Length: 361
Image (cartoon, rainbow, N blue to C red; front, top):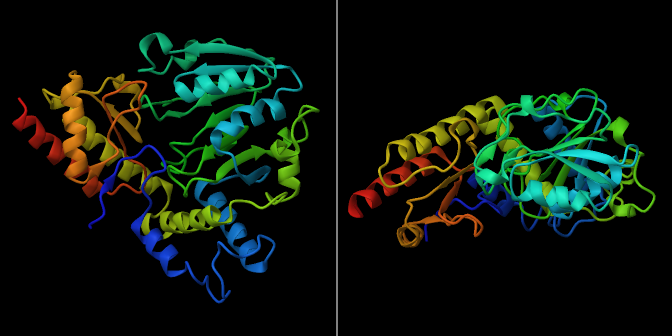
């Protein structure tokens, strides 16, 4: 069977070259005589893998000195608690932009550990837009400001960051990390579940400014304490060794085959534009998202007819375009077009959508 075009929101498609390399090294990694899945995380071969992974990430993202890179477990959802437990202690409050499902969950979790100020929300518009960050009044005394930079379910993204002054900006980049260059120095903390643009599920990456370490609340579990993880080079316990290895391969692919994040950004913009152009001209399909806030990673679309949506998803799946069903909370369809989705996949999807439209007028 030929490979399908996988539009899953996560776990998502990985570069074919990475999959083939992982397959070649599955039984024996290099001259180690064993698989990465088998080797001790304390062994020299794995220490080299995790060291190379961090070095590649620092180089590709331009991570400045003074930031720690942590390879953790528990998904981005565990960070919803880890962040307030590590950062909210000094002032006891934080500002949250609530722009989607995961931002909502993050704010709800943080409220268990301190005061959460929801400074802006687009819930009344079904999260189809991003609030005007310049019109939002932030608390200069807050411990941090939290945003979900790209909203996987609703297909929106921050195109401009809020001006937080001296307050650290915390960003959930789970569905947009590595999709384009970012100025890491503007953030106090970046976190991302790896299963969308970086690696298989099981790995979570945290990039944190060193000056934010050592402020954990007294009851913070040891495993969730950033300072402990930083002092132990992400090896307080056994890390997610195989996803870290695959992450290294993905980062090598970004560097060697794509040419870095600027080149990746141009590819991603072309992919998204091709799909949005069709949605805007189609008489059947449409995008519910405010144009100025459209994500280049996750593209929701609808026909306006629930039965027709179901028919489209079923026929698309049979044609090799899988996981296009929209999130259960919004319905419709969603194409997640992360880094590893090739441009020909978008062209093929648009051609299929045009054909479906012509047959179902």
